[in-house]
Image (cartoon, rainbow, N blue to C red; front, side, top):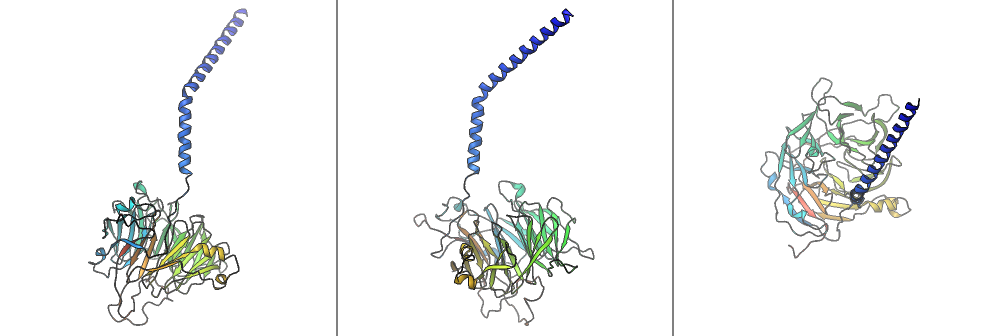
Length: 462
């Protein structure tokens, strides 16, 4: 027993000695690494400070006409078709511009190198006057719709993607760096034939691809190419829930509330739907022509919509579905899709028109006056903040640059080459034709992409 007790005492002493030894080593390591730990915390604090830096929004000048930086016209002269543009869209990172034309080509134009050195407000000149495409992507037929991947960044090649849909073809996902086909998403009709989507949109998280068809929206998983998709009918059969008929002409997802998306049709309606099953929330009516473009505000509180042969852009209050806060007047005399865009802050809305002009409205005026009694509220028409003629032909595309006071425009339309009867281009029909020929007697033809500086100019640098 005594021997066992002595062994226990010796063991306890050894354990205590080990614990004291470990504590000494731990304290020594902590003292030695205290400086490195402090440096790490300082670096992390610095990184947090960088992340917390306020978001910069470009500033614009509306007191004088804008300055033309450069343009692309030769690109669209030697084509078998009329070569008119069908819109333009800046990439999310602002390094390149995507333009669509009637010849079935998607063209990418790089941001001129001189503009990277320009001040955020002052334009210091550009050595290039004629833009040339850095990449061309050929679709089989006429292109219906196209869009960028929302996370597109030239510094991450995996995100350099864009989607397009064309007549008689499945939806394609392209590598915007190489111009190669990355993935194909196939939709089949009742007789198991490939059916082309009329419109498309990628969700803000980059995981879902929404495609618009006749009386339905199909949702694909971006990571799963092929024919597997979720089919969501827009026309109700029970007669109780909200119902939307017609070809889905455009789709937009609310970035501030990704569980809500909007789908518009050529039959003048806009449907709001919720994830994850695409349940119809409501159907908005009020347009005079088929709706061709949708845009949510950055805060997700309002939805802007415009249509073909419709002189108004409507601003819908999503807090009170069905209520129009105000309208913005523009000239749209054909069935062609005329784009509009919001600046990164959501403060200004810009739109082209069939007369060749661009018009800008201050949306904050609409927000301030919509909640007060004023003449503007009674007429619900937002006054123009800026208007300028930028093309001799229809201005069909406009796009704000994400971090420079730079605006891109595209122009052109289909012109008459022979006598057409009055039945062509009926805007009341449920049709996907959005490029009705111009009926002007002596139309001016201009197919071009232009970049406009919308702020100060450094005259000495020029």
